[in-house]
Length: 371
Image (cartoon, rainbow, N blue to C red; front, side):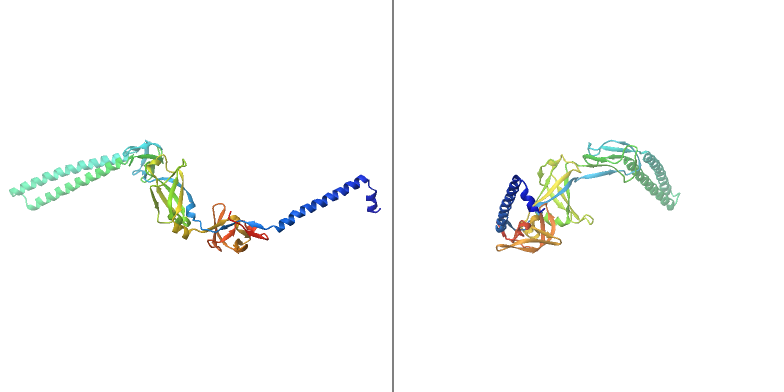
């Protein structure tokens, strides 16, 4: 049976509902098409911005660490077991205060040997002096020749030299025995201990490390690519762990670049007021306010990420040309912060570009005011 005949044989109520639905669909399509046609005719206004150089030195902020300006590693100068470690990490010590004692039995035995050597040399000197005096007396009476007197004088000088040698050996043995007790070279705080009681200490092996708490500095490794920007900064600040920003009392940049990390070490002396710090704490170092000539000569051009159109290997921006936008290819550098990127080529300072590359690419897009 034909479809038309079936439709007309349907109940009248069903036919009325179908007719109403078709009318509502037609009205909705007409109303939705009208705004779309109006939107196509309205121009799209895109804000623009003036390309400027932004000195990255003003925003150079790096992590650093606290380091003691005066720090010493106390090492053993003689071998022997550590009998007692008299201090622990964090203790304050005075100059000359004993820090550790080593086994000195071998040094004591050596000192005893040198004492015996000194006694023997003194006896030989007394004997040589008496022999020389007798020879001189006999020579005055004509009983011996001058050669015998000269021999006695020579033996006396040899005995004197032997005593001097034995005395020097005794002094060296006494000094070696003194090395068995390690003392503080200056007033400071024990930073760390490297051996415990019972460990074997050998010459040159570190026993403990101490530092002077009143002389601290912040050390930061500046990448070589940002070294010139850091040197151009007129203000350097250090952020302490408590959040306070302070200016260093002295700033020193080492004249060498680390060949592996390609960084330059900067040392920033801190004032004595920062005595609450301890070596190893993390700090934040900020290089601000570059000199005007340095800012214009070293600062790169940067643009917002949204202003860059990326299509495969092509990077481009929309440059304002009178009352329209012209697409121009650019060569980008490294990212600056989270929302900007460096432009190496393709733009000049003073040019105006669209802040939104997607909207600027729409048909009829017009340049607007600065955001």
